[in-house]
Every structure is written in structure tokens, then in C-alpha cells.
Length: 361
Figure 1 (cartoon, rainbow, N blue to C red):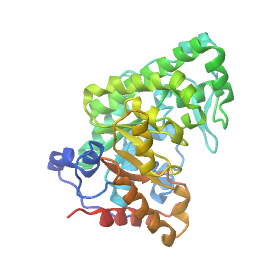
Figure 2: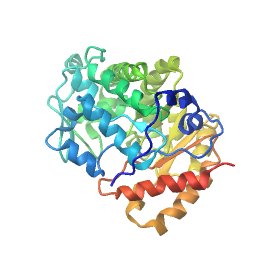
Figure 3: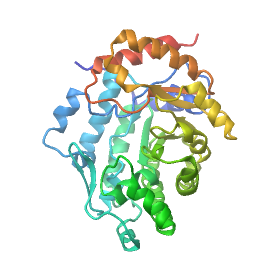
């Protein structure tokens, strides 16, 4: 059964700026290392599966009642230090009429992949009129979360573009890379337009009450550092620069991006997410070596260990907490998302262990 946390009073929002998550994201002292999990809203929770029954992924993301409940479920059950908004990276495109669906067991599938300049006409920034349900959902969540921060998110230009060009998920992103090098002007036009989509979508979430945002560049790890710097970084940097005015922490995450950590930091993130392949202290070293200053980091327990038993998990928690001390701030997370087969009780135990082991006197 879910572990229900005490209900928060409306005045709990007064403590929001001092939450462990936001303090760590700002590189400030914390009472304990904060923890949340990517993909914590859904997937492994039986209560999520029950409420989603008979409803498609994108449909559920457009219903404020479901978005609020699903986003709150892991906060109640695990006692995490932040909630991640329940949504999907292709939702802003879907909301503007772009032909994309999420096929169960496959992922985002695009009806008419973008292969030429004419295809750009179907991509436009989101307006508030396109996503009234996002505004209602965020406002509803903020009213119930009290002192727990809500993280808004969007897909980074490269990752979203890869779906639009490939027509769906891809292991090698061959068509995307071919477009980058074969028609750079079209690529940059597409990526620039998707940066505008991300800016508009994230702005709506922040203005509705989100306390932080995370830009997911899930597939950027398939690129060389040279290609990332030329074809990707400028567009992600545009997103982060546009959001600076809001003063909320900006997190950046990608998978298999160990060789790109310095460049991803330079794009403008306040917190750099690190997958499980690179130790956090090494990640900090790479960020600094690339010419940057130390920044808070997020990560990075290997999700596979969640089914390995507590004797395997606990030493890794200790190691990660120790390595995280090399950064000015550390937010404990997985090195990617929660696997669907994860026992929710294990995640609750991880949260409790991180809080207890990292408690400051």
C-alpha cells in the first residue's frame, strides 16, 4: 500500500524556497541530500496503472484530474523532495495539431516525418490557448504540493527533432545525423523552431507555478562532442537563456553523455544531470576541465540495481553520496528513469536511506 505523507497546509508554500531540493539546486547548504526519481510519476506504481486503465498516454496528460493525481502519487508514497510534472516531451507538439502519437511498447510515432523545408510548417511554438490543461494542472498541483517543489520539463531540441526526423524511436539516429550534415540549414531551422517550442512550453509551466525545470536531451549521448557543439548546444543554450529571467533552477539531463558534460553545462544549466556511467566526482572534474565552474549535479544510481537487492543498493547509495560532496550541491536521483518492474517499496527505502545517511547536524 502507498505510504501516505501528512497533508501540507496552504502556508507550506512559504517554506518552498528553503526546500532541500531548491537549496541543493542553488548550491546552498541543505538539511539532507534531496532525492527524486526520473519517471517516478507512473510506470511501476500499481495505483498509476489502475488510474491509467483505458486511457492513452497523451489523453491522460491532457486531463488535469489525472495529471494532478499521478504527479502526487510518488510524493505520497515515497516522500521524495520534489515532484516531476506528469507529461510527455511530444505533448507540446500534439497540442498544436502536429501529427504525433505514442504507440504502446514503441514510443512516439510521427505520421509525416520532417525531411524537407516544407515539413517545418507543421512545427510552431505553443501558446497558452493550446494548453489550458497544462496551466490548470500545474496550478492544481502547486496548491496541493505546498512546500514540495514541482519540476516542469520539456524535451530538448535535438531529442525532439530526432523523433520528428526518424519518424519514431531510433537506436542510431542515422537519418537525424544525415540531415545535420547533409542539410545544415534545414537542421538549424528545425532545431531553432523546436527551441521556441520548448521555451514557450516551459514558460507556461513556470508562470503557472513550477519551481524548477528540467530539459531532457535523452538521446544527445549518440553524438560526438564536435557534432554536439555545432548542431545541438546553440539551440539548448537558447532555451536556457530565454528562461533565465524567471530565476528558477534549470536542470539538464541526457543519457550516455559522459563526454558531453562540459558542453552541456556550458549550454546554461544550473544543475547537470549525470547518468550512471560516470561517477559524480569525475563528472564535476569534467565540467570544470571544460572551462566551467563547479555546479550542482544530479544522479546517479544505476536503475538496474533497484532489482538487485538491498545488499547491492546500499553500498552504491553510500558511494554516490560521498562522490556528490565534490559538487557545490547534490540532488540524488537515478542515472535514468525508474524501470517499470521496480518494487515501489524499494524506492521508498532508497529515499529513507538517502535522507538518513545524509542528514546534517
